[in-house]
Length: 94
Image 1 (cartoon, helix red, strand yellow):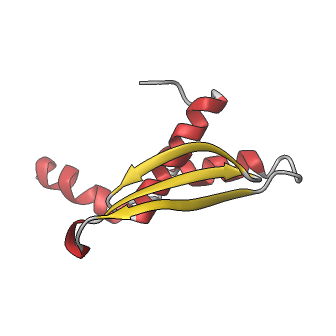
Image 2 (image 1 turned 90 degrees about the horizontal axis):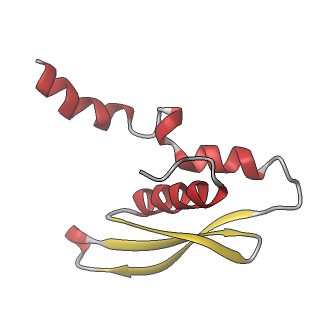
């Protein structure tokens, strides 16, 4: 039962745990400074429809801060947000 729980639970709770939702954490930090604007830009998309690969940049105003890659835009955005949080010192490198 525990093996099944570990496999299924991430699909059910994806994006719902604060510690794993890097985009929300980054947004909360950026909102503390009203002059800052946060955006995500798809820099590239490759692969066939059934196996896409996305590269997304996270930008503060017009400056690219970090990049992320993933098999969906959402996953690539989360990865980019995580990298930005690392650069800001919010999360420690693992």
